[in-house]
Length: 285
Image (cartoon, rainbow, N blue to C red; front, top):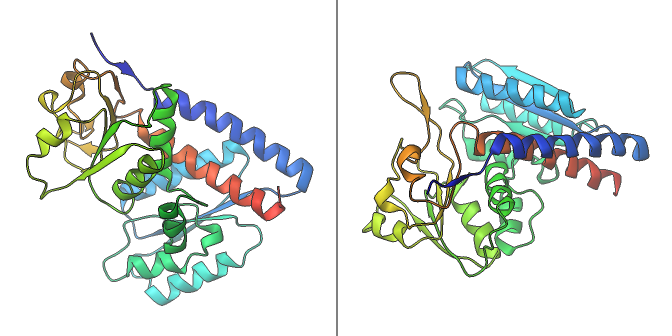
């Protein structure tokens, strides 16, 4: 029996409709229009597409988008200055710095320059600390989307064995924290994990975020497991695929997300939601 598909596009559409309604209500009741500033340094084509998609999503939701495109030669000091200006801009409630940054810029310094109160990506150390304590303010968008997708199935998380493949600060670590706070027993796997396939086979919930196409194979998945594929990889022929061998794993899993059309749309929806939540806090709502 083939796995049930968790449709990220449909879930994101429903979320974005609710966000648009929330924006309208905030404008009506508090006179505040949420604003999101996106900062893009350099001319990376993929990053440019991501920023454009986020801008379009903002416009559709009624959120004020402010875009800052800077040359790759931009200095770290001038980028920090821009972020400080955005921190003080009353029209802006969320700040997004598109990654990766050029190699001469220290990503850590830039992310720490963003005000924790406008950190729509949830990457600032203050927000990371709140997440670890189980009292999050801004949850990173992709992990937040992953949890929403899991919850959409109606399957309980408490008591389940969850395995996260990948230990990045953007996805792996925060999604592990979110699962842990929901009372799952969580294991994080990485390049030095011994018998990684054996560990993954024990999981009721698998979150793959390792950045390797078709890394998770059918024989690594427990029958009936839920498989969330965060990976987006482009093959030499131009095809977009995830970290999971979707066509084969779906024969083994109980639930599975596709690529494209899975976690990706949810990430943008959660960015909009974080921006709206920030504006509501500003309004005291």
